[in-house]
Image (spheres, one colour):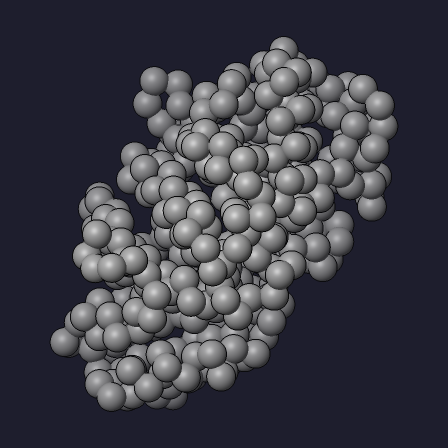
Length: 369
């Protein structure tokens, strides 16, 4: 702890940085950016202009600031948006010693990180996530990406930030449905690595989603620690030790989640799709003999407790199956899923039968086991 209500979580590795979790911490930005930076590109979700003012005020006292408003949601993760940012950086004369600051949700973080990774082959970036989803997922770990017509996050690079500032006060401004959606990634972390997260959520779901209370900050920190531990051990998703799937474990539930997002033209929130995807893969694990009934059933109970969806029938199996085949985790024609043998015991399930995939879909779509 570095102060009252403030924590500093260190991310080790080849390019170490800190994740600062606290309230009203915008004044930390200059210290993270450093003295050599002259220009800062402030990439923010356009609808957050008013919320961003305190951060912009801090930046403008020290730097020449180029503020670039971005489209909402997944619309920002497009090649044309990245191109517009590159053009703006070029017009403003940004050099390798300048920096990017992102301010917004996961899509803003992904796009802004990608712009920073690709401008002059990489400039400094600091993330200021404003949604629960971005705090526990997109802002930490160095993954950047944009979408294509073929699928989500298929174009991107690894580019670790110089730092991450998690201002919990921004959660007070978040619409309720966005806060709940962010819990999809939090609960996922409970299943793959930290059962205390599940205990906290299940014992008091109301407190778990209260941005004014003490439980949600603990959940945020725990989920961030899960991600830090994973990415430090396996930054570029090359595999973990002793049979652990490595960074791939963070994609628990994501193969089906990304297929659902694509089928819904990204109108479904990512955390909602993750919750459904985790329930799907829990059923798949049950069917393939990996997971016991109680732990499989616990998925729907835990995600449902905080108001997340646990079933989906908006697209047919064949369409979702085709979408899953272009998932980043697929190898050739072989689908790969992260499944659990038990809580916090993830393994890779490669090439499950279509019979099992379809049977799990039938349960996800509301059918009986």
